Image 1 (spheres, rainbow, N blue to C red):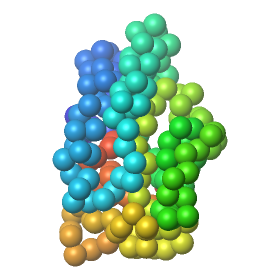
Image 2: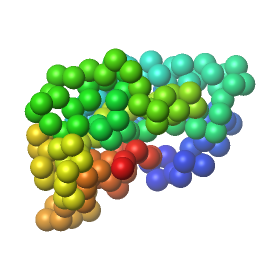
Image 3: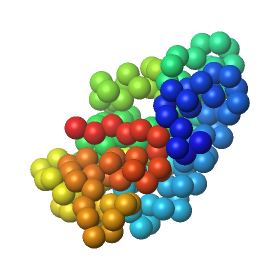
Length: 170
């Protein structure tokens, strides 16, 4: 499933060949195993993600699923997500928990997606290599000597390393 396209994942969810909880668990396990080397994610909340996946499965079960319902996604840490740490890769915001959702997050939530976590980024998106984050540099999963690019390097590395099927960036 880690190599499946979003269209293939959506079809598997709709046909109930896999549940959102199963998909979310698969990707959370990959994050837990691979993120210590890549540093692609700043924040992961397994329980919060699995609760979202259970809600998505219930929505699909009621026949109310949309094309992205149940799909796990990662979000660049520049986007505020209610109840999630949002640092923008900066020490200044190291403890900021957003009280609201950015529009992009609200739209993905309305579609029934599951947030796997928030991805690393150049501080305040002011860079092009993802080496200037307060949370440490992001490693390229294909070549440890190369940078993943930036400022959305955490999202890029998370997708390239198959820690998430898709991610937001700027």
